[in-house]
Length: 169
Image 1 (cartoon, rainbow, N blue to C red):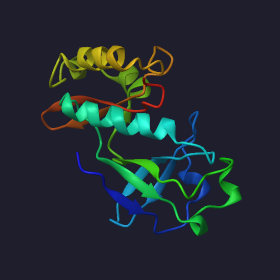
Image 2: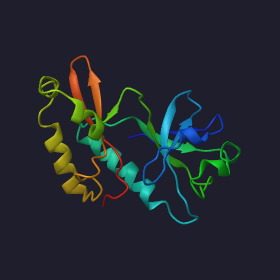
Image 3: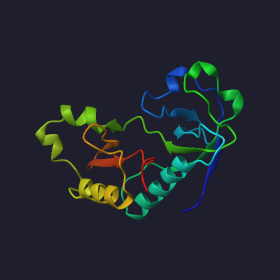
């Protein structure tokens, strides 16, 4: 898997902060795409970001759906205190996952899904494979209160997209 690097091209606004535990940022990057970026908050080693990268790489090897991912450098002038995220180490590249506005959060979407729609999953073993992956990587963050799954609805059917692997290994 080739390492790819991009950089931010516009200031990050408060509405581009996701309201989750680690407060990832939606960053407009030099390839003109948006990426959901997790950042290092300290001067120390970015262990959580490396776990994200390793887990995403292994997900690709396991042939599970995963958004394209890369490293993003956020320019200091694109950050402001009004974001409300605390300290961001702009010297450390962020882990960025390509943002697809058509993905839906499983916890919200599956509740509304009819039984007919639930039969449209392309691969019925996909969820089981993700479960085995979580066991293999000791992912402690995916649980009944925190699915960390997105749903991709395509013409052919649905796919689970596992996200958030900072608690692996």
